Image 1: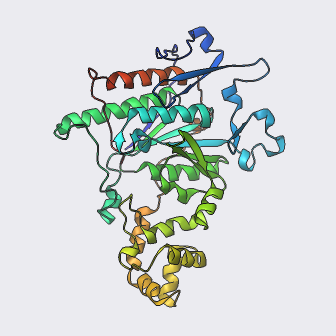
Image 2 (image 1 turned 180 degrees about the vertical axis):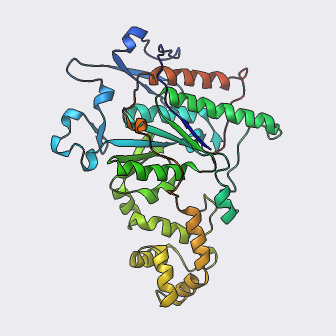
Image 3 (image 1 turned 45 degrees about the vertical axis):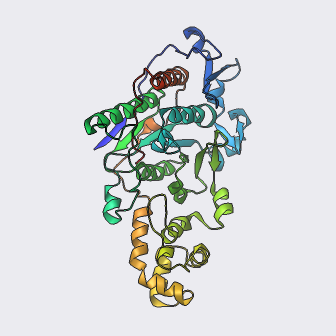
Length: 386
């Protein structure tokens, strides 16, 4: 089952929380761009920028960034527009991990990071939100039962009935979907598929249309997609901001090509996802050995094929590659992002995002979350991180 929610065209009068610093009437709202920024101490600040007579709204004009500097359309050299780093951007929002503060479910965390993304990073660029589908881990767990086995639903009361839990999960997820839809963000959730695989499939389709891609997620699995035209923007909790992670960052960090990232993780394992590495079986086979072999052979499959017909390294490495070839190939199948999910890019997902509802929708969301956190309010509903 494919569940796609498209943004609806709605008209909302701004409803700002009482502790906001600025009150805006519905008439003035049309002539201003409002940016909601959540500071660290649970007070919500709002900043209004008036459109000048000689330009579009600031949100509309600041849609190019170089490093940490935003460039207006006027400042972008004409000869570069539509080329290289000045291609139009499409953002993919990996929703599930943003709904957690550490290991605790948090609707406030979702609201905070989405508010920062919309107001400081994506601006009017199109954003496509992707959720994990129901039973999304089953295929990989058939190959490796330990895959994400520690990731469970977090709830306040362990004795809560399953029927009540499912109801709370559904309400929480629907609330988040409603916020995104009202902010003109299409929402995609495909049964039996992880959000990572849906994003990887759609990234290929977006690149074929000539766009650049930015994936908003803290998930390191997306590093295998990094290229000149695919970047990651990660939420940095300690700095309270989003930070871009590019091809240059990857090479500086790992001293290898991103195409080797997946192969390296297959050899070293992934403790977070419950995928054991070969060092548990062959203690001497560490990261240094793996990097050296991958730099020479390029990929895990090339390395295993070479090891099957000739000596590729020291005796312990040679024996390990021959003895545990199936083990490593299974890791590859588990960790590799799929690009064959049955989902097709829609033209309406690529249009400039209308930001006029962001302020009122997010303000109402923050107020609702604060009300439900009060002792006499309803219990906060949570949903699984997949």
